[in-house]
Image 1 (cartoon, rainbow, N blue to C red):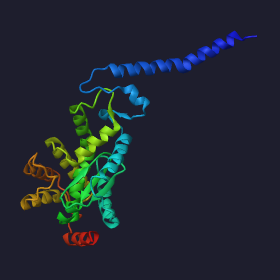
Image 2: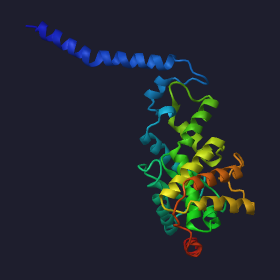
Image 3: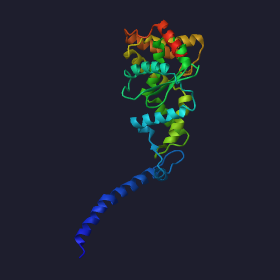
Length: 284
């Protein structure tokens, strides 16, 4: 004998369990796919079926940011020569972690890398990945000056400046839509910007101020950030991280005003002889 009542109950349970969620997904997809957006449209449904990860850079989570940073680091390893000098890497990490603990985002799992390159440069990507050139290590007179540049790059991480630039580039190139941006496209854009980053006035001033606060909180001499900039300008080195826009003299004046308004007793890292001895040993 057929239990019609039982079958009816099972049917209603199945409908609640599967039908309504399915309708919700279809409606959500319809909203995403029909929402007008500038640039080249991305058909979200095929991307989902293919397992492509679609990101919304406007509200990227910290975990997504760190994961993107890891993927960008893998890509960068093919573009730049990362040092395998364990002593040198350990030394830079020691400085970086001291600064990171006093930064705007101390809970990020920061990674500090050394790039074998004589250019006086440093850059940062997403999720706390910071890269320091050996040329910068050699150009600094003391640890505080080196720390000032690392703090500046940590300031870019704190301000999420690269995320903003990636979003702007994706929109301008027509690959960002209401559906989002393909993860691999995001990584490619991020790597290109990290290596050839356009320097906006607002971002550089912001990274300077964030970096100065981090440097001071970590106990380093804040004057080292100014002295390093001034020295490189006098020598005409023209490092990449000292962009001509905004004018470095304006940045130095802004830093001096900040230092004078909040005097610090921090003097750590000013021993030139000790630093030079360490660097010579590390770079052998």
